[in-house]
Image 1: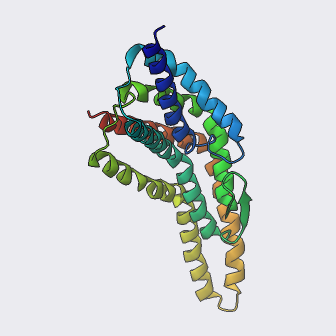
Image 2 (image 1 turned 30 degrees about the vertical axis):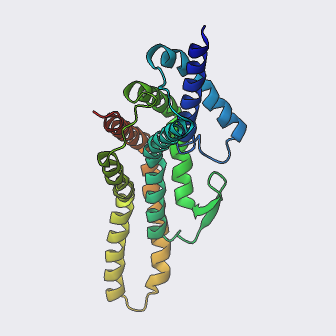
Image 3 (image 1 turned 90 degrees about the vertical axis):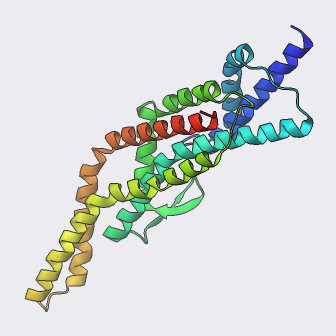
Length: 260
């Protein structure tokens, strides 16, 4: 092995390491604070090592200055972070839906500490997020997104990133899906609570002396928990659909970033 080939291999390994680091900083399960930092670093190094033979066979780094290599590293970090953000949409939609459900059934004040993000979130959001993360691993979602990230090196090779306005516009349009999917997740609860409010309004008109507010809180909680019980059974299909949607968006963004 010549010195030029060795330096090219080292440079490709570092570029792949930077891209994987950006990806694992902002992707479900791997980005949680509960995961040890050394484990994340080791996983990034392992994935970069596995990618290295393919990169050596297909890519040669251009001769750039120190500033040029620094800009390339920033671009690779941005690429990994963007792809991780797209996949992170999966848990963000569940958290958004859980917040809406919590407000509808009166659990908005019930906050728990999330050790993964060091934030206080609603108890329904925590339940949906943890259930979604477990199903994500059970369905092999981590392997699917790693396979998609492997394809990013084929569609956008190192030093081949082309950041255009189309990419930024596509990601901004995609981010609104967090609110749309979150609202769709909470829609059954909203419909049931709306029907319950109408029924309580009719009861309040026919029986004015009844304490409708005290009765309403209990009915909303019971009705909400019943709907959540049936909703959990469909959570696996929901995670699969959200994962497919994320992968489609990842491929679309990679085509734009590759200049296609």
